[in-house]
Length: 216
Image 1 (tube, rainbow, N blue to C red):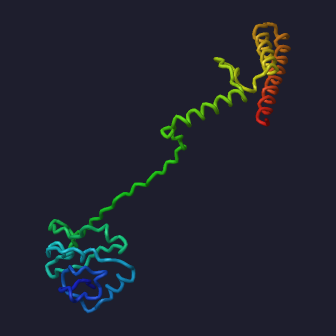
Image 2 (cartoon, rainbow, N blue to C red):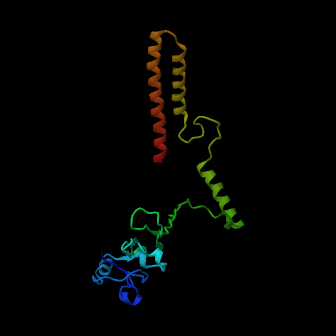
Image 3 (cartoon, helix red, strand yellow):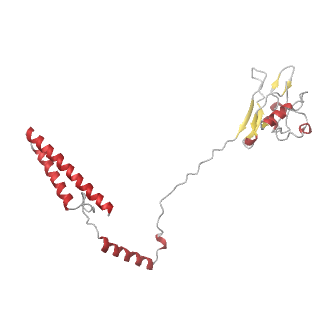
């Protein structure tokens, strides 16, 4: 079996980027091939990064051998996430290999939500002279454009509402009342046709008035 570990820190000189220097056992005759492989894949040996007692380093324990042959690796870019790595020294395990645990501290980054709000007028910067100027602008606007009448319902007060539209809408309402009040089947069919015609005419006149207002 190949082993990463060496009894002294001086034996891993030149591999401090992958080996923390804390291990158990002697390096076998394979030399540094496993360390070279770890470096090639840009990894770090978690078992060797933290000083531990012997019972927290040994991963294989039998009557004939006590050694460290099981390792946990992590990427160098995640070196700040690993906070601890150790063996659980329990004798209740059925296998000869002991459980190796690595603690990772992962912090969830909250995404900053950018809220684009509507620009607001800085009324706090309004002074008396500017207030008088704004009032003059409002007065001139009322005189040039006029003001709408404050009706409580319907379309009254809208600029597109005029006499022609009102006449067509009243005709449609009268046709509808005539339709619902009549009980004769033949007359109801005639009134239904008249109501549909009045409804289309009222809709056409209202659309024309709105379009003309937009063009202006």
